[in-house]
Image 1 (cartoon, rainbow, N blue to C red):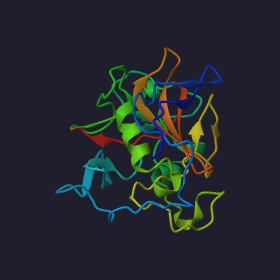
Image 2: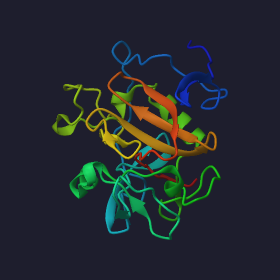
Image 3: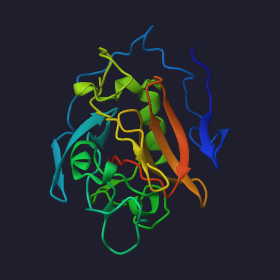
Image 4: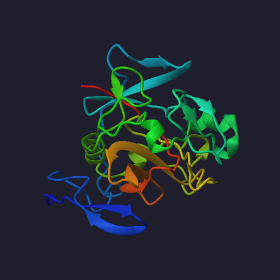
Length: 241
């Protein structure tokens, strides 16, 4: 039987520390064991009576994971602005497109600063830029997602067209239909890590400086992280319970 743990590696002010923020009493796996004990998942299915959400002119397929309804595609809503410009509270949803190229938003979704994502609120579980009835994932939403997938990133990652630069083919890819793509990020007014990393903002504020996110990379694990609110990251919405 796996032991209980409440630790998560989080990056705050550029120093990695061990924190209890992410999981206070839930199972957390030190490493992914898929190569030895691959988990068996039920067939991928859309959310009941809601296979697609149309929002802001974009269609978002849904996926039911462990009884919760997630969007299976990154948010791509808003007006593109230059990566040299901060997003502002101006009643217009703004987004970055990697390399200031709208094609990248079409493929990977937009990249957003945390305050814009939250629509300038700080309450965990806020609707933010999600459609009505949906919200920016909470700490608990992320914990449940990680534990259900046994901390194995490949179960959630879509490697169609081998977009993930450091992965070949694997029968473990995207077994639950969450379809994570390597969208990269925007950091200090420059873009980086396309085809290598994806970061999803959560709605939990860590400090005036940073907020919670999930990191997906080619090391097989899903890592909880804290990044600066000015960074541009991807967004997935989850339906309210």
